[in-house]
Length: 150
Image 1 (cartoon, rainbow, N blue to C red):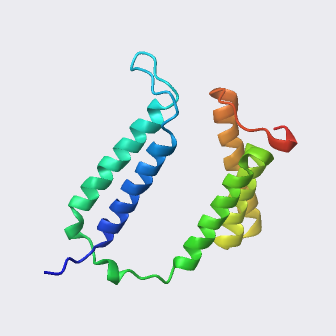
Image 2 (image 1 turned 90 degrees about the vertical axis):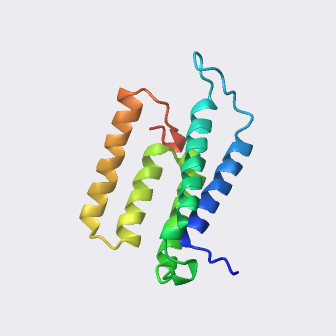
């Protein structure tokens, strides 16, 4: 009997594997207790929940289409998005939050999604400023300042 791998088998398996990698790489973070949570509690809880939902996805995979039926015509677009995200991660600390996010959103909207220039600029700057105000000013969460000091 031949087992047919379905899209949810592949997606769920990849999520479980990624979760296991995250758990292994973040094992040095202190977990703490419920009364006094450590830096590793939230990432661990989110990763375990993500892996649990992925297992449910795998168990219900019979309802998804076969993996062989996937239309791969959009893989180049997805690779460009992943590449831009990787560059943003690489430069996030050195450039800082504001320039990295403005550049990330601008490249994604203007260069990759082919939106008009002015709306792409307004969207990129506006969303970044709202996020900066929310996290840095209101929530007082430290954001990387980078070489431009903001």
